[in-house]
Length: 85
Image (cartoon, rainbow, N blue to C red; front, top):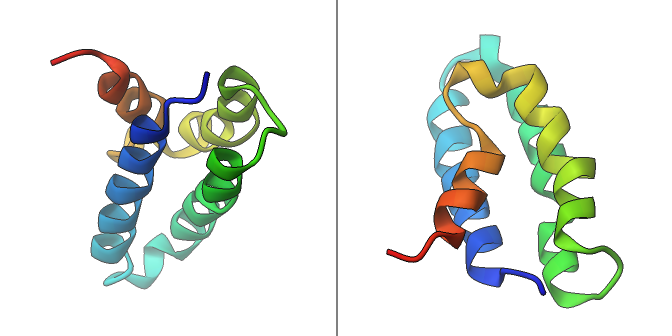
């Protein structure tokens, strides 16, 4: 089952992160890759193309491997949002 709230949290945090990072042109490639990682998330929520695990492996994981050390790890955001508070 899709965890819609967790995916929405990823979008929220990615958007805020990108807004902050776009103030410096040195971050443009990272921002491009971040937007590439989340651009299908709303469609994933809407449609039944992929299971969450497949979607995360296709989109969030590649970004995290390349850029996670720069301060935003999409899979961690997703997992934290899935954890009951």
